[in-house]
Length: 116
Image (tube, rainbow, N blue to C red):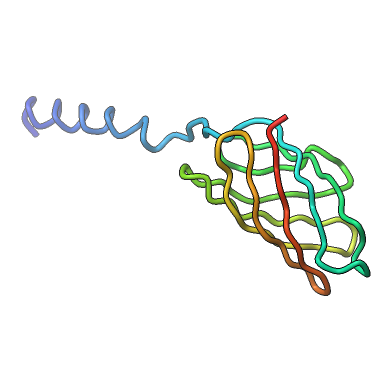
């Protein structure tokens, strides 16, 4: 391989590296998520603290496991579980707030979020 081609390949590889690395998300930080149920038999709701780092969701509470992802445009998909109960949710974050819906085995409802 001649020197020009070798240099070109090294340059192309170096330019591609930043794209492949994880980068901070606009939505990174601590969030409070307020969960409301559509049925009184499922409870009056709860508030869960979550953290977002590089677009990945994690729980800020040892009693609740949270996982999921936030896309660059704010679309969010999340799973929450505590004990034998679990739920999945989706929606959108925008700026310092967000909202969406969730569903579990027997219950469903809405959620709202605000950046802490």
